[in-house]
Each structure stands twice: as C-alpha cells, then as structure tokens.
Image (cartoon, rainbow, N blue to C red; front, top):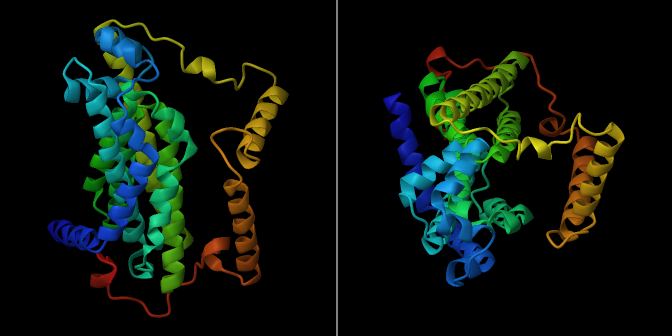
Length: 339
C-alpha cells in the first residue's frame, strides 16, 4: 500500500511537471469561455434569492435531496453568499477537474499514451460543453456543482487505483466522494457511469495493445468493482438524504421527480421527446449546439467502419480467454506503475 502511494505521488509529480502547456491551454479556454463570469459584475438566475434569504434557499435544496450542496455551501460561505468569490472558486475548481481528468486518462493509458498535446482535446471538449452554458448561469450553486464534478473524477481515479492495485481501501474515498457528489447534484450520477465505462474501455484497449490477454472473468470482475462503488454510493446517498430530512424536520418535495415523465405519460410521447432532443443536438436546432457534433459523429462512424474492417479488437471488445503464452511470475502479477 505504501509502495503504491509513493509511486503514485511520483507519477502525479511527473505528470504535472510535463503538462505545463496543457495547464496553460486549459486556463486559456477557461478565460475564453467563462471570462465574462469572472470579470463581469452581474448576477444571474436566482442569485438574488440566496443573497436576500440564505436559509430559505438552503431549506429548498434540502427538500429536493441536495444535502451535499448545502453542506458545501455552509463549509465555504458560512451563511453568506458572495457571487464574485463563487465565480472565482467555480472556474478554479473546473480547471483542477480538467487537469484531473487528463491525469486519469494518462494514468490508465500508461505506456500507450502518446505523450503529446493530443490529451488537451478532452478538457477542451469538456470545458466548452453546451450543458455548462446554462448550468453555470446558476451562480448560487455553480461552485458546489463544479466541486462535485471534481469529486466524481477523483472517485473514478480512486476506483481505478482499487482495480489496479487490488487494495479495497481505495474504494472508501471513491464511495465518499461519489456520495458527496450525488447529494450535491443528482444529475452527476450519470457522470460517474460515463467515466467508468470510458475507463473500462481504455483498460481493454491498453491490454489489447500490450498483448495482455485477460480472461473474460477478469474483465467481469473489473465491471463489478465499478458497479459496486456506484451502487453503494447511490444507496448511501439516499439513506443520508432521508436521515437529514427526518432530523431537520424538512418535508421532501417532488420538484425533481415531477420532471421524470417515464410511466407518467404514454410511451409514444416519451419516445417522441427523446427523438426531438436527439434531433436538436445533432442538427444544431438550439443556441447551445452547432454542426460540429454532426461532423464528429460522421468522422467517428467512418473510423469505426475502418477499424471493423481491420478487425481491431479494442473496438469490437473481442476478449481472448486463452492464457498468455508467457506467464509472468507471481510476484510480478501486480504492476503498480506502467513503465
């Protein structure tokens, strides 16, 4: 355990030392995209509510299960709210989140990393995602949400440490951070699922490129570890919310559940809404999107077709169950650093 942590510190230090240009590019795009939020002294959606009646807003968040948001707010703002400090903290945290997601990617790739600036594509796409255009208009919760985003990324990183090293201890901070993120903003439930799937695919890709043909049950066990962290965190978050509501005597409201239409309207209406949403995204039928998404889909499809014809195993996820020809000694079965 100590050896793993010591080696990880070295890897983080090396990554930061060799990623100065990446950090500068991230800072540039934060200023380009959100600079107006940092330097323009104006309020936005619901900000005046929290300034005039802080406790009322806290109770409203508690009633919809965002106890983590309230805890973070009290921890950093202590019963008051300053929108300028909130904006500053928001984009500092978002920058750290971008660096963290780059490290997670590089960490999994190991010796398969290109060691080039190509990694910068990930934070640029992440920073400029249209969903943030509206999300960060809610200045009253923008810092807490960006911090929760960082927590999800760190939870995914600790999950990978748990998978790579086999030490169950790493699952504890992963569960704590992910639970905190869930009770801050429930939409982030899907964010961890997305990162877990991406991490799993990267693990398969690295194994395929390194000729490390694991058995199917090994990959199944990796999936179970990711799922167990997700499930435990989800259950813990719901128990925590119900407990705090009961202790504080706050009535739960249906503000969020009312927005879920599954089972409440005919199925054809649900499918129609999904089709409309997909159409708006792909064909830029909204101020939040452009045709770059459609172009990207076309390019990805072409790439997939090319890889299929070339029988790329990392794409088709053809997991070879045969034993490796060259078995490694038992004392080398756990590799803590990708050389």
